[in-house]
Image 1 (cartoon, rainbow, N blue to C red):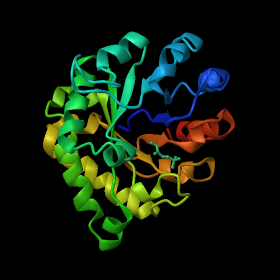
Image 2 (cartoon, protein in one colour):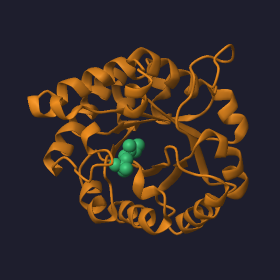
Image 3 (cartoon, rainbow, N blue to C red):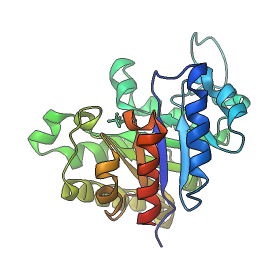
Image 4 (spheres, helix red, strand yellow):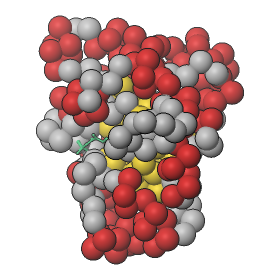
Length: 250
Ligand code: 13P
């Protein structure tokens, strides 16, 4: 049975008070697509205001610290995200893996901490262009997956994996449909090896230059259970056609 599609926007370092109206527009338009789960992951400092602006709509964070509390200047704990009204968080985005040198082990700890606090988690994995060109994309992504997903299969239903090839992010380039299908199938098999039957409950999102023009064909691929959208999630006029395509794909 196909999983409910999840279309999540990653606003990255975009969004101030004057953008709350855009969030409200997306939340209100999303009500027309009850078959799709829609969420926006906004800057931590905007979460509480976004939640107040759109009660009942899913607002998330973009990162979380693995510790409960302590001397971690500038970091945000899972409890703080929950306290602000977030219901999910991204972990392991390639921009953080690169710029903040986050390891798989750290990302696994973050995912575990977030799930323990009742947050849903979108955990990102994906290969660089050189790895793709060398022909090692599947192997590399599966080893990232193995090392960064939480151990507990009971957490599977609250976990989503986002396959985001680094070279496709913000570039306008995407893998071929066959390459997406190959990767999502490999991820599904590995999840099932790790979690037994529970692996089928983990949603596998595709991310990287998802747009209204390519969303339909991407959502038609087996084991693509949604999308993590960057640039095209900032405006309702770009984001809602992607949500509509997910709804049509069922
Ligand atoms: P773009 O959709 O802008 O390529 O970004 C993808 C991404 O990084 C989402 O997390």
